[in-house]
Structure formats: structure tokens, C-alpha cells
Length: 556
RNA sequence: UGGGGCGUAGCCAAGCGGUAAGGCAGCGGGUUUUGAUCCCGUCAUGCGUAGGUUCGAAUCCUACCGCCCCAGCCA
Figure 1 (cartoon, rainbow, N blue to C red):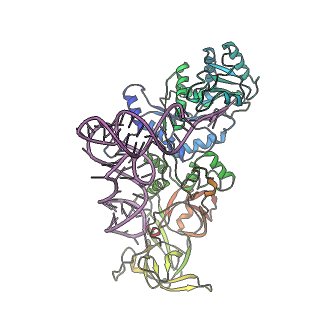
Figure 2: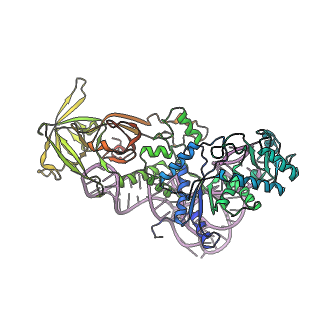
Figure 3: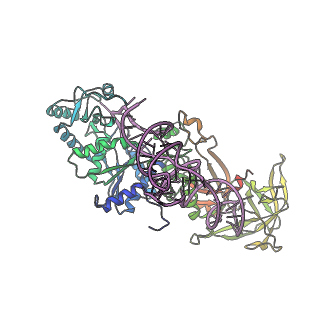
């Protein structure tokens, strides 16, 4: 570690000590999503943590689908999750695993508990069980079925397994302590009846283990040394440890908790994201405004930016709300370093160069990137008629306006200096064209009079360009905490979260832009071709994020 | 009011008894054929509050305050 590296966080410290003290010989982690929805930026923190730790300490990280509830899970999500983890840049250890791979073993362990007198079949209805459980401040009461014999329990559990009991009729519970201050220890349900097919095991089972009964044991089976989860599972740790202590498991994994990611101006609950999709506020789970990984990918966010962000925010046990500006910084930083440059005029204003021959076209070379010489240069056709941005021309302006002004000069990016000589307006008085003169002696050098124009604007040939549609995204929500307190997050959807511009003119090379490949449209922002809409003749470009804009910030 | 956590700048976050790292945002300046990038400077006499221990406390002790999580046959 250099003196410049980040200080270690608490999990890195724990792992280093465990490795040094011999508690574990090799680090083994796992990322355990439930396949019941799409991965989002919050999951990215967990993914980067688990896989990152394994890389850092020369260990392994498994991908395990925590699929103990067939009522909520689907194969579709399994595929999407694999795709997103891979996209983020991580490779899991061996094949993807499933908690359902261990259903046989888990069932045997349930039998073991019953034989030991540590689990029983309870016929309390869900409602009655709730009453017996007590409250946060009052202890619970023992179930009347708590003292059934092991033989009877074995027989009853077998009937549950064979489908002879109805859903909700009974459940298998661990016999721990109905008076425990920690509610998770008040005889938790470990197997429940669900007469439905499972996406991995088909109709083999009609009883399914609970999260608590499955997670720690699955960790043990896989030899996970550090089972990392979020804070809300801390109350489950005594239960996690109880199963590990009372079952003949092959290893003794330990659970550690960290604070999940919260981002302002963002919502990351599967239920709410689903609602945005279902009610048509967005175009789907992969809408570029969504915080899902598939949405961020479609928007043009590079996976490295998300990794950097996860590194930057740190790992602690304190609840926090990270400023989305930090994510935006990481995206800009990554894109600035790697995205090839291009020019695209969003709202075209025609410019005619009165002293440039009609029909003439010259090819001006332009660097692919201001400092990355490994990025290929591009050729820009320069012609008598051009397009510039409407907002880059004014008939009159103060000296702070560093663009084209009537009677003044400006530099065309990667090309010549021009001067605005005349304005042409339509009947409505709108400017529809600017007639300029070009100084052909300014390619790569200042004008002969030594007066350097203070502005540089982007442009595109009006005769050779790519007609395209550009989608400008803004924050999905206008409120920093759209779902805080009693607020209805839908009331805070930003009405201006999408602006669609058509008739935009991109430099000719953009015709071959590949979907999801980022460009910087100079002076504008970072864009990538949409992976869903658009045609070969008229591509659609998504704005990933704008450039920092100190001009706009001045209030101008 | 039971149990479990957490409080360091606008935000994230180091710090673990020796006198408050770093990053984001902000502000000021320099370079620049992107009002971008880059570079430089600036930004907590203060660590939830109040006491106490100590030569010395964000770090130890006590009390209080605030916020988060838990009463699914969800994960």
C-alpha cells in the first residue's frame, strides 16, 4: 500500500486479521441476490464489495441466487442478474449457485433439528402465530404444539413435505425462546408450505426453507468465510449463529453487516421501481433514467464509473445518503478520460460562408481526444454551409459571451475563425441564417492580426452530416428525498426529466457509432447511441450526462 | 416503553489518548482551439449534548438527546 491509497475500511481490517491470525486460510465471499427483480446501483455497492474483497485478498466470490421463495422469483431475473454482474466487470467463482441446490441437505438438517428436539411442527395459523409471538415490548407465549415428540414431528413434517397439509395449515419452527428480546429468536419459522413450482427445482418440493434457515447453512456448504450483508440483518445474526452451532455443518462462516447505499434524488426499492415501470413514468426497467444497472448501461454509464463510485463512497456501518453528484463526478471522470470526441449540433442554425466557394469541400483532421493520442483522429468535412448551435449566436452581447456575435469573430472548433457579417430572419423575426466570412489563414494558428478570438464553438457541415435524435435526461425526481417520511414519491417525479430533440446534426463519423459506446459531444456532454431505438439512417443518442458548466452556473 | 445499530464540514469518510486525512460540492486564481479537462489555493479552534478522568480527549467513563432497523409462513 502506498501512502496515497485509501485507508482500509472495517471489513478489510477484519479480513486481514482473520487471515493473519489463521482463523481462515483463504477469503471466500458471495453475492447472494434474490432473483425477484433487476439489480440497481444499491446492489452495485454489495457486488463491488464482495467481489472486490475477493480480488484484493486473493480469495473467491460466488454468485448465489437466494431462491427460497418461488412465489416471487423468476428465471428471467436470474439471466438479467448474471448479465449485470458481468457487465459491472466481475467474474464469479465457478458456476452460478442456487440456494435451491441445497434443498436436500437443508431438509436433512431440518430432520436433524427435529430429532434433537430443537424444531417442531406448529399448527398455529399465521394470525395466531403472530399473537403468540408477543410484541416488541412483551414476550411471546409458547405454542401449544411446542412439546410434540420428535416422532410425531418427524411424521408431521413428512406429511408437510408430501403435500398432505394445506398452505398455512402448519409450519416447521425452531425451538429457541419465545421470551427472547430479539424477536427473531422467538421460535422462527424454518420451513413453510408453498404448493407451487420453483424455477429451478420444478415441482419437487412443496415446502421451502426460510431465509434464516437457508442462508447461513448455504454459506457453510460453500465454505464462505465472510458472509457480508446489510444492516437490517444484524438482528438475524444470533439466529444465523444458532443454526451453525446446532447443525453438523462443514464450516463456520461468520456474518458481517454494512450500511446499504442511499442516494439522494433517487429511489431504489424494487416495489417503487416496478411502479414507475408499470405506471408508465419510464420506458421500462432499462429506461436510461432508472437507477438499475441495465438502465445505467443503456444511458451510457461505464461500469468503471460505478466501480469507482463504490470505491469512493466507502464502507461503514452508519446510515448515510450519498449525494448523487458524487456518482455524476465519477461518470464524468471516467468518460472524460476515455470517450472519443465528436461534434453534434443540437439545435441547428445555418451559417453560410460567403467567401467560401460553393461546392468545395475540404477534409479537416481533428484529434479523437485532447490528450489520448491512442484514440484515432477523425476527418471533418468543411463546406460553404454549416450548422452551429442557435444559442451560440447573438446579434449583440456583453463581453462575457464568448461565442459568435454579429460583427465579431469566433473560432470554429478544429477549423477556421469566422466573422458574422449579416443576419437573415424570417417573417416572424426569427433568425434563420447567419452569413459569415471565413479567414482561411487560421487553421491551427491565430489570425494574422494577432487578435485571438476568445470563443470556440462547435459546428457541423450542413452538406455532410448525420441526422439524429438526441434524448436529454435529467434527474428522475426533483426532490432530494422523494420517498422520505410520508411522501408519495410519484408526486416528485421531475416533469422535465426527458427532453427529446430531433433534427440534430452530428458529424458524419457518428453514423457508425455503436450502441453503448460513449462519445463526448464537445461542449455538450457525453452521449451514446441507444441500444433500443433508432435506425441506421437516424440514430438515437442518449445523453449520459452533461459537461460541468460554469457558464450556466453564472446564471446566464 | 424491549432488543439491535449509528451520530466527525452541505454530502461521503479517515481517525482507536498526543492536539481534526482525503474525496464530492462550494469559493478564488492559472492554463486551455471544449465556458470541459488539468493545475494551484481556500474551506471543522471543531467531532450529537452535558459532565467527568487525564499534563493532554473525537478517541476513556457517566448521563442525556437524535436518527435507523426488528412484531412476513419476504429476503
